Length: 94
Image 1 (spheres, rainbow, N blue to C red):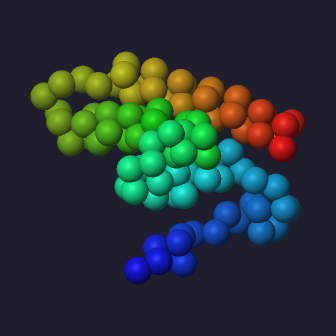
Image 2: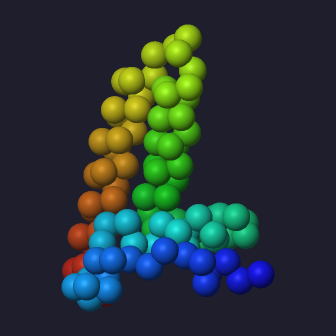
Image 3: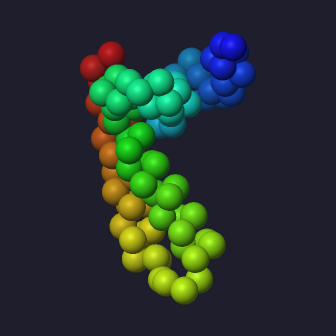
């Protein structure tokens, strides 16, 4: 089955013709599922910080015995920085 057919298209790219800071995340997740970890990073450098953020956000929402708020805030800021730096790099170099 070709899962690529079912991926959500980027609205920003369709309307404005420009990638958004999240462009490439779905394809990068698919590459991770296929075991192509390096290719996933090269396609979307923020993929691993995004996954860590999602995991700890899930812990924060469902595990009420511990406080994960500082980790979640740190990962959100780190992920935002990695996303924006890689986005600016992509816009200026490609």
